[in-house]
Amino acid sequence: MIGLDANVLIRYLTQDDPEQSARANQVIDGLSESRPGYVTMIVLAEIHWVLRRGYKQDPEAVTDVLLGLLDSTEIVVERADTVRQALRQAADGADFADALIQQLGQEAGCDLTVTFDHNAGERAGMRLLA
Image (cartoon, rainbow, N blue to C red; front, side):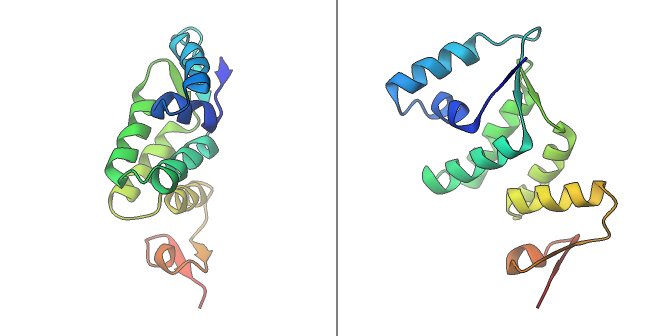
């Protein structure tokens, strides 16, 4: 297994830098079920943020990208079920990173997660500190 950083996956997904994209393609195209790539939740949160903010992609397109990584047999995603739950919340309007934070807290036994983020504070499992 080989760990994949967000910048490598971004180059692979966007193909916007010929030199780096070619190197990313070589690594990712060489992955297999027997030698998969490993993607952490932090990497997924970075990818989500970069594609939304930096590349101005719409939320549905970014969700599709992350689901594609989750569904790939050549990629192992850290806590894939947790990530899927967070993506469902994001599809309902939550910020993906906030949904991931809330989901991880819930799985750890937290009654709720407190935040100063007004949008996140309105979501189930979160409470705004006002």
